[in-house]
Image 1 (cartoon, rainbow, N blue to C red):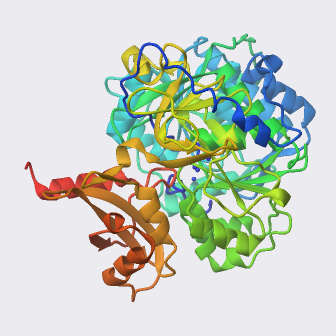
Image 2 (cartoon, one colour):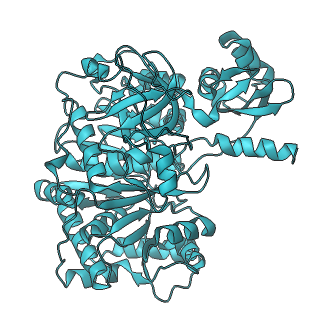
Image 3 (cartoon, rainbow, N blue to C red):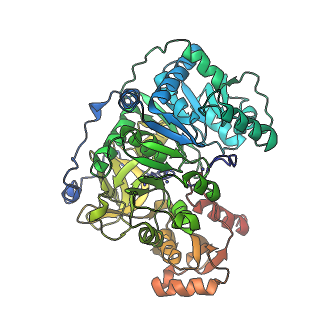
Length: 606
């Protein structure tokens, strides 16, 4: 379902997904009434469901995420919930700290439904703040810690957030972004604040080193800022006033589309999130057990994929999360997991590829690994095959997007009965319906390509304060247009062809970048690749690829020759450019748009 990037944190820590980044639906002109359904596609996937997976889930099982959280804390109180910087945080202590933080927010006047921004990497502070905000009845606005001042200011203004919790490494960005926003409350925290042990001497020493020795905390001036530890102390001293959340109440404003246009806040309700975690829970019930799983979490929890899968789904299992704050620092990642045994992991294609390139990772014992999940971007066949050869376990690919909380479809997780990697994104999740809309507005039949449309309890309420944008992607019958082109086979399995907007048109023929990239990625001397269409006076567009070499001896001629062996002539790249690295989103998804923009800029106004 899909980055491996996050804040460049101190070397004392270690920081990525499918839920796509999460692919924001391309604007579409939707009919006011959905076209007549194709009778030979609806529900055909149920015949391929694992025997123990129900067709539907009961979304009324929990009234809110808070109820779910409280039940998990009560059930797994003594179990470790999170591991960070060599320290443990139990479910019981997480519950206590989250309650205190919620009480503090109420004490400073945060009202139910008010938006609270969280600008934190993968550290203990994130889940404490997350569940504290929800327990106070407020709405979580997740913020990427690597945002620029412009990006942060936009999101704060658009969401109307009046409170922000920020890691001190990024407090200067907050200071510069505040003018013109409604923010009145700032809570600041350092990496070592919540580490356990005695008077937390380890945490204090760590904060001192980062601030004064490594100089990793830029100077900032936020006179109104309250240290998180002080906020918790105030919260411990007073009771939390329970707030009863409703199913339709907004739990998250999850921003998406910032790299493809104006960022929009997807309104994800308590019902949306509960539905998605229950869908995934019943899907994986035969593979994962309660109270015994440890999941490697290199994807940032502020991202919708890790938020739902790692923070919520594994919480329902009493899972132990190993937090990785900076997955790009592979040396630090290996140091963190050197003595850890994990039974599950989530990553995106680029991160799996980075793991496979690491010598220490290749030497690990994977006998305890039960489930390796991928999403957010297409998993390349070469990466999947190398991972299975190394670990003996397949990468289970799924699909989702922010607007669907995020999971839409999943491959069966019974690793003992899986076929070789096919590139499928699986079957629609329980209580989820999927159809494919053709260019003429009609629904596609089996084997016909069209824009993937989704209907289910996990589909967002809409975009925050953007009714017109909402109407563009959700029709009157509740079908969400994803902007992805796909096809369903006779068994109900879905295969994505590509993003609608990424399609390359060469002399009237459709070329899908994923196909070109998959072929080139299979070359042994290629580390990473991205394909785009560039304007051509004769053909309309031609294919250009950007390649990161694994071997310095690789030439453009070799890349093209390899493509000619595997692709029809019009799909073969005409241009090859070598790069040291490719632009990526905060979750490791390669930014084709950034590469296209560079190419267009070279050609000038014409």
